[in-house]
Image (cartoon, rainbow, N blue to C red; front, top):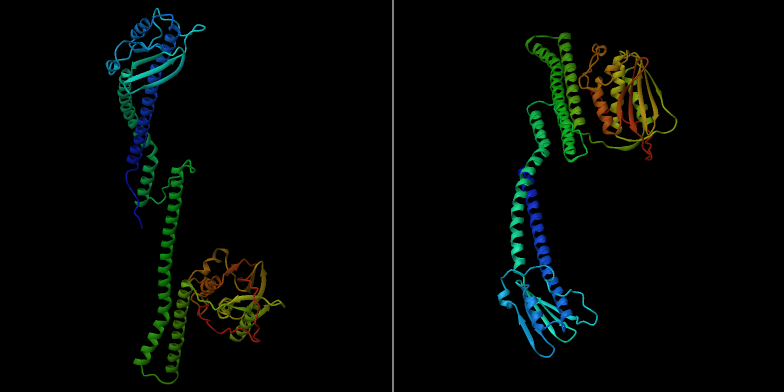
Length: 488
């Protein structure tokens, strides 16, 4: 599992933003430098073109030397190659112009002809730019065959760009400093909710389980994090409460189980001690031996119930098979009539088959527990009805009796382990595990056992999912005598 990168988010955010600002400033400086250099050099080229056009309009009107002098007076190196073969050179040489500032960038000087040529005047037919970083050279061919070469210094461009670069550097540093201060304040304010999250987490860890973030805007990034943390805290606190409740139930269960076992064990111990120490014969000895057998049976049944309850918690392994629910109910009704001859037991079973996919022995055990519960609560002489009813996609087997019934507040509590209602305490045998076992088996089948509201008596419903699988009729009732331990 990879570890979470826990570097300072504030530091990383500030450094990242400042790095981005610095990069943008560098890009801006480069763009300004390139654009300004191109603009300044373009101005020199435009100046040379203007001077060339103005000079061409004066060719043949003004002497070549006079033209050269006028142009050189503007800080240009001038060379005029006449069509007849002569040439005129004026002004500083290109080597002298290299490194010197450029001449005045203004328009034509006094005495200079306008740039617009008169009709029939000489014009520029071709121009070629040249030079390097320090010089700009324009070689132009005139319509009369002469050639005019003008060279201007570009050293001023570099000086201007150098000054601009210093200005940009200073301004960039100032902008970075201002941005650093602003980013620190903004990031600190922006990340303040994270400090609140950590404070709440520490408070909850210190015992304040009811603290929550409750974001005002749950659709934002921080809001989603806070909402997720609140949900997680609710789950954690709920799990903690459930774990504590489960621990309390386990302790109560162990205490009750120990109490229930202590009674038969104490009886067995007392009877066995009497049998060993006393010299008894005849009916008294047989009575004590029978008492030992009854208490041992009671303890054994309780241990079997506890083991079955543990298997239910761990997960039962069911041997599912297609079956007709009517056969299972008929078999349980027949068994109950033999065990409780004083009980009036009726069945309400449909004529059509009721297909289910169940573990026959386990479902028989559930019905046995419910019938035994009804027999015990009615003292073995009440009226019990077993009926099969449809319930949507499920099927129900209802076991109703004419006993004292179950209060609304106790309809769920009776399914807790080792819970017996006051009306049932006078009865013998049950320890309060039959109903929890019955519900556990039913839920393992995908169904449930519930105590339904009733006008009189109690009604317990075993709900099972229907099965469309074909039923293999065996011609006999399902075995009902397996696993009858654990009744209420």
